[in-house]
Image (cartoon, rainbow, N blue to C red; front, side):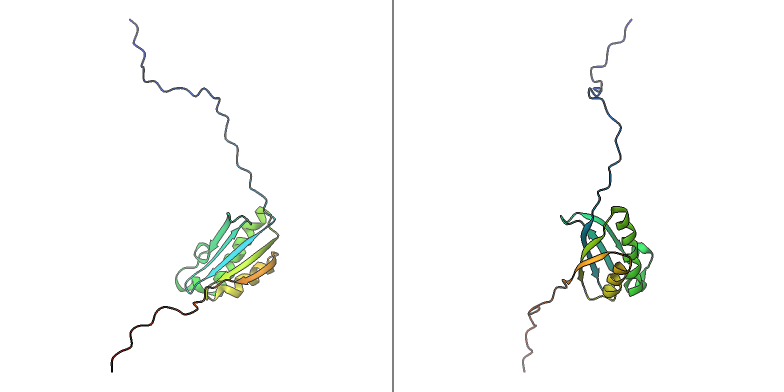
Length: 141
């Protein structure tokens, strides 16, 4: 006796499945580097001119934790880590935008320049309040 065929069999792919190829990394000769230096951390992010993230690093990724992450030395190390990633992508020049009041502002930019990144634009985009928050009601006398 023959067994009845299962009517709910999975359809085999009629299209021949080719093995997936590794995606080639894009070469990005120029980009934008954002340095966000807060009181607790320094985050360095690199994007291409369209705004797509190429690489990012913070002082925590490099290995600094707690109060050591907010130091200028930690910011310099995270910028050096970024430059290693950028050499794989082929980035030679970049615009640098700095944001925030942290200690790592200057040291991150200095280490980027020392590592061989040609900085074309250096701009501070720290948000500054024009009038601030509404003040509290004055006490009665």
